[in-house]
Amino acid sequence: MKKTFKMITMTATAAMLLAFGGQSFAATSTFTDLDNSAAKDKIISLQERGLLKGVSANHFAPRSIMTKAQGIQLIVNALSLNLDLVRFFKEPKASDYFPNAQDDAWYANALIIASVNGLDLPKDLNPDQLLTREEFTHELIHAIEVTGKLPMIKPVPVEIADQDQINVEYSGSIVRALNYGVIKLGEDGKVNPKLIIARSEAAEEVYNALEYLKAPTAPIDENGKLSGLQGIQLITDATGVTPALNEGADPNAALTRETFTVLLVKAMEEAGKLPMINILPADIKDADQIDTLSSGAIQRALKYGIVNLNADGSFEPKAEMTIAQGKAAADNAIAYLKAHPAPAE
Picture 1: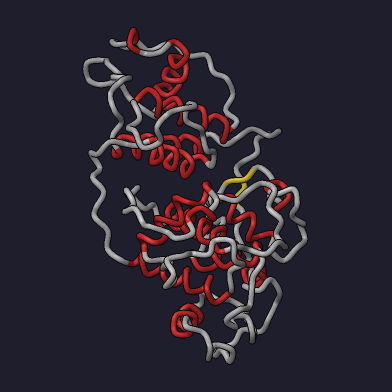
Picture 2 (picture 1 turned 45 degrees about the horizontal axis):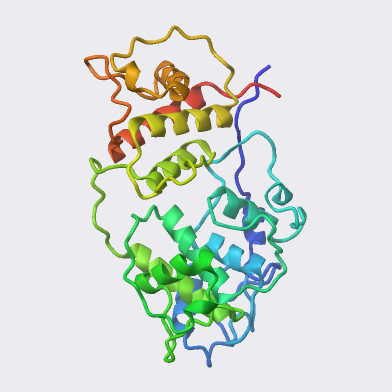
């Protein structure tokens, strides 16, 4: 008996429960608490576009603060994230990803969606804890970069007066947020990273992020080299498994055909719970250039049809992978997984 991938989708009821404030409020087309908010026009624009669901009065008062769960849900709603194309072997639960989360809480679906879509959330997340400016900005920037498939940029250095107060892990995101125009420095040159973020501030950041995503970007050169970060994202999108580069590897450096293929094959086998197969090894002209530990995975990749040998029978394991080649291999992996559903556990 075989068990196919289970497609988990949000029902209309579940979607309605993903209300911004975490409770089932009656939606309103006007906000009576924005007169003192500098972000009034932006908040109204988000609401009119249907990106602020189920909010009630006082949600956007200038100093109305928010919890981590509310911040995550705002990002999920604003970016229209969902589980429509995600394959699960069993019904997911919030506690599968975050031990501190309650599976029957209002925020459960939002946490699952955020985690599955690659948002950078700590495993020890406390959904009820208040959210700081640096935490929300980091999560938002990571979300738009992952889901918007933004090209890696070399940010312009920004002099931040309170740089020493920013968590080192969030520093890069804060600088890129300033470069994207998602946030601005205060008149004193500070970002005040440790302050609890107000809902109005979070909504303004979301608006600015969406405006950045709408702006035209330079086309990606498909013949350009595939970086480690880009390769990891391709594999994650294709299999739902996020592989790790070798310790010390430069994530911005180009991946070799050998490295990318091995990472993709192992992720695909984990995602699809593929059985071990006996294969007749292909005759690879330049097999002597392939690392011994990579040989088996490359042979299986050829068997799965993920990659092919060149016309002369070579694989060119040390050649740098192009973006086009990476996308083609990822597409082949998706096709193989769909044609070979995972066996029943």
